[in-house]
Length: 276
Image (cartoon, rainbow, N blue to C red; front, top):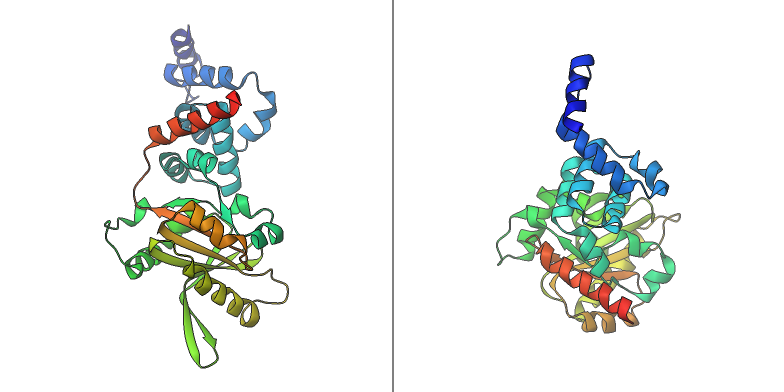
């Protein structure tokens, strides 16, 4: 029936494109998928058909589809960026992630949990397993556009090795950003080893210097991110529990995660919650 209808359109309206039998089957499947969810009709129209097809064909559940639809709208993803986020298992990592934010950050910026992530996949850097902080910083700056896509559209890059002068000494923040929605400076410190509690002392010092000497009167307190190669979640929780500055600890990966492994873990957690 669909094949015959496609032929009918070609014969009677040869100027109309995009109605091959394959596309008509996709349209039918697309309709059947969302037919029972009229509340999504408005958001579905906010993204291009190509985006809808990518999400429809690659996502397994309605929740995952809604996640990427909203992300595509909010972050204004191109088709390439959307594919990249799905490949990087953003949905699974977001569902599994337990963002480690300092209590001060939760109080000052309640929306911070939606802005920052527990982990970032930096597969586009092409770095070897053994690399230095200088290598990491250099490649992130070289590919800053791709990195900002990972961070989010409201991040603006300010500087690398941003100089802070305190007393007679000079200090340097690895990467400095500004976040438009939160209206604050964001200091990002890179660590190619496992998180250590003493890392927070260095970051807090930078945040204090930014707030005293750089932050403008209308801006919110500066936020700090420690991007580490590895971390012990319990150690991070202890380190942040009484931290007086808005900050968080995130982990970075150089390879795309095993999507099936993450999906299985997510299904297991959701299953455990349903059993309770």
